[in-house]
Image (tube, rainbow, N blue to C red; front, side, top):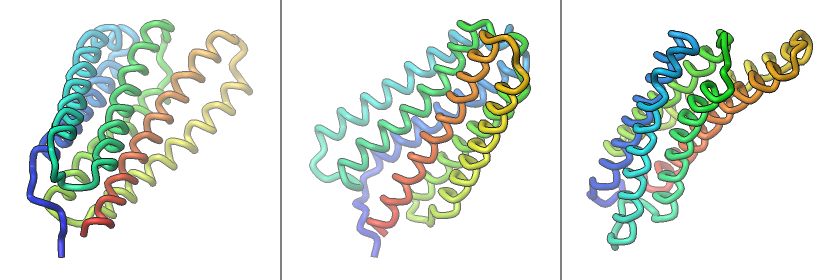
Length: 204
């Protein structure tokens, strides 16, 4: 028997946030594909999207304080909102730092890692929709875990190559931080997937 109460407002807000998150990850990719100038072009729009996501998180916490019966544990609602926000913050931070560090040309691996982030965001949106509709979420969560592992391996190889071949210490630091930020964003996506899976196990 499914014990999730029929209360859609939290799911609406979570799904709204994942839509914003997917827009941000898609926007980052569009900027990266136009090089450094492309990322500069999207910076203001990305900041506005991040602000939009912050407002949704504020709405989630406001509703949490005002709601007696929630669709799942309040602690899980709080954790899910926080981790979703961490993903969006990571995407925004990567955009900002590429511009601030004047990372040009942008290494192709940055786009490769950003594609993994976008894939994770898309799958998380599907996972939350499945949770709302009381369908199985495990396959989505496993796929996010697989993508995070792939990003982790890619980042390790990139860092090894940087320290072996990059002679300019400033260039090394710039690239290293961007790679690490993108991989850390996939970690945050995995955190979201873990919470979704835990909620599904507890309430289905």
